[in-house]
Amino acid sequence: MKNEITNNQKRIFSGIQPTGNLHLGNYLGAIKNWVNLQRDIPSIFSIVDLHAITVPQDPMKLRDSIHEVTAAIIASGVDVKKSILFNQSSVKEHTELAWIFNCVCRIGWLNRMTQFKEKAGKNREKATVGLYSYPVLMAADILLYKATHVPVGEDQKQHIELARDIASAFNSMFTKENEEDFFSLPEPQILGTATRVMSLRDGTKKMSKSDASDASRINLTDTKEQISNKIKKAKTDPNPLPETMDELKSRPEALNLLNIYAALSSQTISITLEQFSGKGFSHFKPLLIELAVETLSPISSEMRVLLKDTKEIDKILKIGEEKAKNIAEPVLKKVKNLVGFIN
Image 1 (cartoon, rainbow, N blue to C red):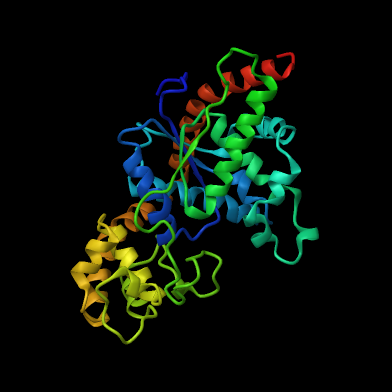
Image 2 (image 1 turned 60 degrees about the vertical axis):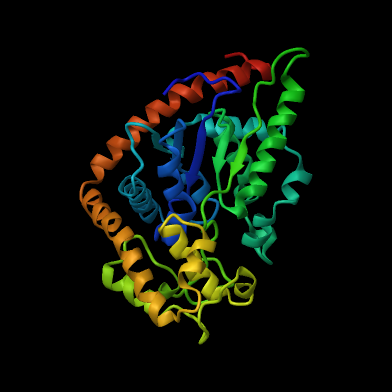
């Protein structure tokens, strides 16, 4: 991968937090897309461990989670010889650029971030500064590599808009007249059918690793039996599957299961609906189970193999770190020069 990039070349950057229990939503919403994108566009993928500590983490569990997430990414098909894969905290330029961006970003911009309000809840005064300002670090993650495209879920689109605002403000503050803007504005890529996979127990809530019920999600480490049982017990309604999308709007659980089937089979929801309209869940669920097991079992099996030797995972991350630094270091050096620092 070339270290230099011009504003008309494409480059992908995306990250995933190492908080354990990766599930179907993480796979369909992020990792599956990464596997497809890397074929055509130079790609950088990061285990964003700095973002993980915006809420308290057990240090030993965090290390285990970094290994588990790395194993899941590799087992899913990300090619570490073709793409860059590294853990965020190993490249210090992320935090250095984030501080500079903290001095560019406006308080009002951060006050509009809906995810902080959701995560902090009623105890906003007890939330950490890191939780409040992590969208600035996310902007640094992206712009440090001059990424042009960022595959994200719908709920992260606002953060890409902030990254664009920060890039624009930096360009205005530090790019001289008649010179090309230093940072191009990254574009969000919201890909795939299941950009927002919902709980198997409640179709109105997002599938989450923090849900108290393990039955609400399919974990990437689940066995064939566990996958089968969870789908069998997934909440549905007594009616057959409808013919139109309009009829699905009031049936969130049916919509969720159809979305999952469509995403796993790489087809549109409309084709899936056409395939199963008029059929009952007794017909649909066994086919969904077969497809989910066929897709996920090889991933979970490969993860178990990789996790038997975490030293090998560490080697892979170290190689990715060096590749990431080769891109990040000259970008940050130029930023420091523009700001007026002595390098």
